Amino acid sequence: MKRFEGQNVVVTGGTRGIGKGISEAFLKEGANVLATYSGNKAAADAFVEEFKEFESQISLSCFDVSSYEDAEKFFDELEFEKLDILVNNAGIRKDNVVGMMPSDDWQKVIDINLTGTFNMSKLAVMKMMRARYGRIVNITSPCSHFGFAGQANYAASKAGQIGLTRSLSKEVAKRGITVNCVSPGFIGTELIADLPEDLVKTYKGQVPMKRFGDVAEVAACVLFLAGKDASYVTGTVLEVTGGL
Image (cartoon, rainbow, N blue to C red):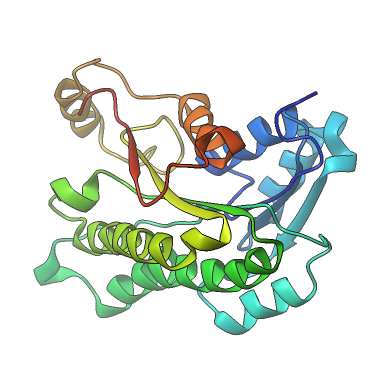
């Protein structure tokens, strides 16, 4: 029997990049996966086409996780009778130094990366508590504690995710719900594809393994924390950084 046979999983931002890798890993382990996306229908359609062998296990939903009303509607209409696992992966970057950063760029990153995690986690917990079981995994970043020039908004949002994770984990522990973070370092996805070549070389030089990670390496850690074997692991941050 596959590890997640019959379990229901929501992966936000689940059709591209790290989210796509996480969705794929759950599908291969027998889960029913509802992958959300914010508007890139072409990528969502390509995701379904690529994994059409799992079409009976795949559902899609397009909405804005930063909107509480949209998230509430999503959960009201959720096709799953029970929700076993939520992976909060949806996230964006809008880089600039603080002195030049438009306030809208600050707010948008906070809204999607942090408020989106709150919205989805709050509504998921309400479902999970009734079943007295659940797994929430938030995708954060080592930027939360290192900080990188030009990414104050991103770093603040990711640090906030960790604080939220640790507080929420204490609130729901008695209900059989665990809440953890996976913190990927430099992973080869479109999120970092726009970095200048010289910066890519610099970042790789900072990683002891001297390479960027693969989405499958992140997904493996998410599946561990989402599994029943991790029942005594909560409020933690699992670093997937190549030793950064």
